[in-house]
Length: 82
Image (cartoon, rainbow, N blue to C red; front, side, top):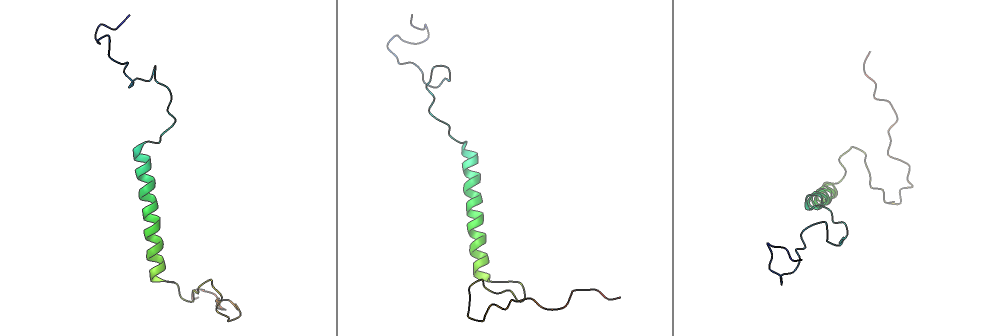
């Protein structure tokens, strides 16, 4: 029997959950926006860090320059006075 609020020739509404077929899970748009923003922040921070280079004294690149790889540490502790 047709619904009294709908004409007899109109198609069934597809917006409801009861009669609609599952279309698969889709993440909410806010989650996608957050992940995209997170990726942009990581890419920008990597590029900034790569452009400024090492910031600690004695820090060297991990690539071998042929110096034998003796290490960059210094001998002595960082103790206070007295």
